[in-house]
Amino acid sequence: MKMKKRKKSAITRRNRMGIIFVLPFIIGLFVFFIPALFNLFRFSMSDIQVLSGGRGYSLDFVGLSYYRKALMEDPKFNRMLLELLGTVLVQTPIILIFSLLIASILNQEFHGRTLARVIFFIPVIVSTGAIAYVQNNWVSIMTVSDLGNALADSSSSGVYALLERIDVGQGLIQVIVEAANGLNRIIRSSGMQIYVLLAALQEIPSSIYEAAKVEGCSAWECFWKITIPSVVPQIIICAVYTLISIFTATDTEIYEYIVNQEFVNNQLSFAAAMNVLYLMGVGVCLLVGGGIIKLGNLHKD
Amino acid sequence: MKDKALYTKISKYVMRVLRFVLIFGLCYVILKPIIQYFLYACMSQEDFRDYTVSMIPKNWSTFYWRKAAELLDLFGETGLRSILFSVTIAIVQMLSSLVIGYGLARFKFRGKKFLNFMLFVVMLVPMTVLQLPQYFQFRFFGIGSLKMNLINTLIPYYILSLTGLGLKQALYIFLMKSLFEQMPTDMENAAYIDGAGIFKTFGLVVVPNAKALMITVFLFAFCWTWTETSFATAFYPDLSLLSSTLLELDGMMGMSAGNVTYAGIIIIMIPMLILMIFCQKYLVKSITLSGMAN
Image (cartoon, rainbow over all chains, first blue to last red; front, side):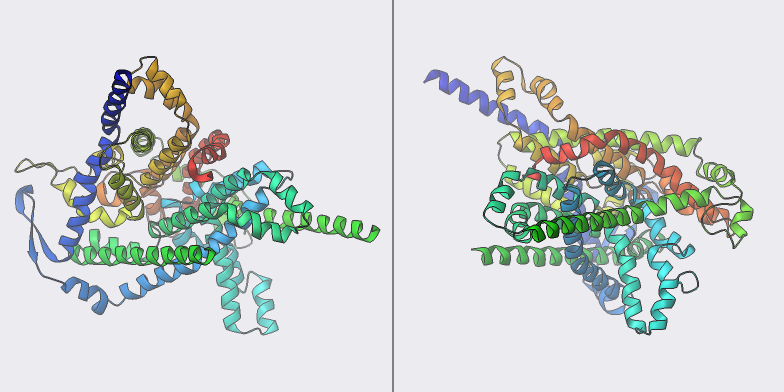
């Protein structure tokens, strides 16, 4: 009895010591994260006046006027925010399906599998930040050799000319060109997801597939009845990851616009209001995503 | 019966060809820009103006490489600062994520649920959104009348990395946390019974087991800090780093020679690719080990 008590107290003491490990995060939350979030709301509803002599800044409450400006008066912000939300809703499912397809192919046995895995991971670390920005904004304008641009530039490529000769209509050509451009973007943004799903697929024991084959299951049925159900948790993780990476990307039009207002035009409160609206956009997307997952679960029950 | 065997054989063969075409095609799409930038950067100035040269240079030259290295200040202050900054930030982020992840996974204390919830919130809030209030916080850093200006120093990003708020750091913490939740506690308990303290156990038993994931996190943290520009424009706009200089290369050269940017891209990519090749074998392993796979 006495022994047990002492053991218990050692564990409690250890647990109490454990807070030391989490202390940096607690400091980060209460000194930097939560105040910053709070200040963002405050800034968006007031005029900021920087005091002379580095003594700080003062705020004058102005209410919701900057929100009105962002939503009603600004010619670009509305469109860019809606476009971003549209991109998220369209791209997330495409990226997930694409990653699952590639992961299940990379899970098969074939020559050069390791090399292919390495190559698919290159964009995750390479096409980020400055390089992604240059690739999206500068290189694609300057060269005609991107897949999409090659199609778009009639003088350099036969495909576009061919499509034009067949007379499939400008609209359809536009769709094909955009799909080709999108393919590039999707490959670039699904490397991490491929890896996570690949790791999940490797965890499924092969005996299940063998048993199913004996029972007369076709490969198609195996995919829907075994593979998909066992990677559902990873698909959800990937969906969250995809959402985050689209919203935190710094090569989007809207991010550039807000930063420009912030650090170049010095429209601080206006930028803060746009940031709050942006944050709300993220929230809406997450709610929609969460709702879909919940519906899926209900359906299963 | 024979027909069926032939049918499966043919379909297998067709599938293999299709798979090859798909994988090869996608690898081509990924690698093509890199090869292309490399070739562009190897062109001489005449080739750049020559319309008959489209991909492979006629006169190979190192002109653009030298120019890019010079403009990026690769072997000078900028290059040195970039490499030191990225390596130290990667180490700081790796260690703080390791410690925080371990704390969240292993110990029971009050408010743990709240911290887990906040980790999720931090992961979902784009850090770029908070840069404006954080700018003010670091511009007037301190308590009461004691204020310091930390803007245009690298200190703000070190502080944020140390407290788990760096770029995508919530993801690393989440990975570490899942790894430790998967890991059996037997070894640690044995160490405790042998009389080791909590920190000794952490250093001697836990850290060696997390090696693969630590290397992976280091790789991510290094690469994502190496190319990062959003914190740079917010907190240290006057300090030149390779990533922020890359965006200005085009303007620095004027209209006459665009290929400098291609050389710049490749120069910035090289350390990341080398690091990736070295860390490759830990990647899948660490993702399988951490909770991502289960």
